[in-house]
Amino acid sequence: MAIRTERDGEIVTIVIDRPERRNAVDREHAEALASAFRAFEADEQARVAILAGDHGTFCAGADLKAVSQADGKANRVVEQGDGPMGPTRMELSKPVIAAVAGHAVAGGLELAVWCDLRVVEESAIFGVFCRRWGVPLVDGGTVRLPRIVGHGRAMDMILTGRPVGGEEALRIGLADRLVPDGMARSSAETLAREIAAFPQRCMRADRASAIQQWDRAIPEALLGEYQLGIEVVRSGETREGATRFRQGAGRHGHFEPPAVSRGGLPRKENLE
Image 1 (spheres, rainbow, N blue to C red):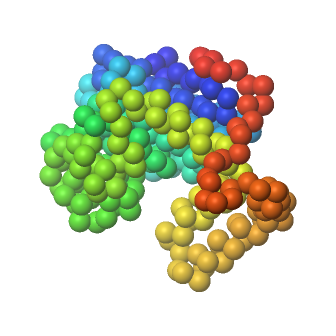
Image 2 (image 1 turned 90 degrees about the vertical axis):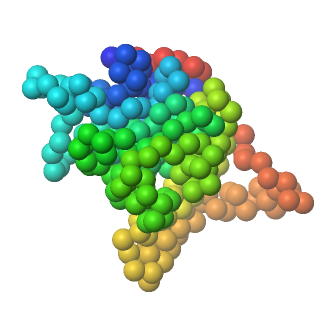
């Protein structure tokens, strides 16, 4: 399989490795991506996932060669279940970071905006390149892209299909971190370790509230935020953190996550 999972402590990295298709995804590999993220979600010791492409490309979208042939390899397009690119309809409880090198276009763009954060190399290219081929965005691109960059900028990308480079992606909010070429994955791993080191109940509750508030009126969204937050308080995690502060942590503006607990997990282990 050209979808592999690697493990470094609490960090899981899921890698697309189809250089002969520029990491384009057909039905088989979409199903493998979905399975990999289900395994991440079910793994209680895994805290943050990274999605990356090998060989200097993130993902060129759906495999149009497979789409053009009636041999059962085309991406599955159905109303219910997984998206054509695999995990794009999943609502995970834990964060995912996209490590974007090279092209993240068409369905590859949709995979990138499905992730919580995007660490992007300077020469990376985003774009709705499927515009020229009559292939619609059906993996959340028309929903998530406007929420990330705003309606006007999203319409510019969606209607024209033009390429958006790393610098522009950072300027419009599509990239969260811009890094030198060749550094996307290592920078994403550093960011993932920082996130994994924080108290997890609180981080996940705040993340869930930020996601759920989009389709709620403000009073309902505030109630949802309270309900998630109070569970964190009741868990004892908040008191634990306040005790660390009382004992001297974080004084004088010093900011550092608590030490990451490795839990005896193997480092850099290839799981497939």
